[in-house]
Amino acid sequence: MARSADAKIRPNKKIEKTAVGDDNVKEDISKSTSAPVSAPTQTTITEEKLVLPGDIVGTTEEYKAGDGTYTISSDIHSILTGNVVIDQKRRTIAVKPGTGVPPIVSKGDIVVGNVINVRESIALIEINAIKGYGERAILNPGIAAVHISNVMDDYVKDLSQQFAPQDVVKAKVIDMSNMRLTTAGNELGVMSADCSNCGIGMVAEKDKLKCPECGRTENRKISSDYGTGII
Ligand SMILES: [Zn+2]
Image (cartoon, rainbow, N blue to C red):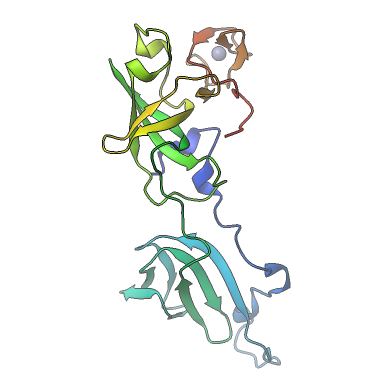
C-alpha cells in the first residue's frame, strides 16, 4: 500500500490534517511530568487523524483504550474507520466513526495512482486517490489494470511506450469486478513521470516528455493535466 514513496503525488500521506480547532489545544499537557501544576479545568480533547480498522493509534503506556479501540499487548488498535480522539485529561484514546469515513472507489470514478508494472497487454496501477475527495485515504485502494485496448482511442502496439513504472496516472474506472481502468480521453493519462535515465521529472513537450537534465525524450499517453498535479 505504501509503495508510492517516490511518486510526485502522494495523496495517502497527508490525511492527518483533519484536526478540529487544534489551534486552541495544548497537546503537551500530558507530558508536563508529575509535578502538580494547576491541572486544566477543562477536558482537553484533540481530534486527530483518520485511521482504518487495525491501525495502531497509541500504546497503553500513554493512554487508556477508549471507545472504538482494542488492545493487543501494549498497542491500542482501532476497530473501525474514523478519527482518533484523544482526551488528555482522562488519558484515553478513542476512535470516533463518522466525519472521516473514507471514500470508496466505484465505477465511473476518476482515480489517480502509480504505475507499478507494465506487462505486454496491461499496466498495473496502484490507486491512491479519487477525484473529488482531495487527499483523503481510500477505503478500498488496490491494484487496477489498464488494458492495452483502453489506453487511448487509437490502436496501441507497445504498452511500454505509453506507461512506465512509477508514472503517476489519472484514469477512469470502467469495471469494478476486474478493476479495469481507461486512460482514453484528453485529461486522462500520465500526470507525472521521471526520466528513466536520470530520474528527474520530465516536462511535456508537444506529444512527448523531455528530461530537462539529459535531454532524453520518452513517449507516454500524456494527460492534458500533465505536470499540474490537478486531479
Ligand atoms: Zn534524464
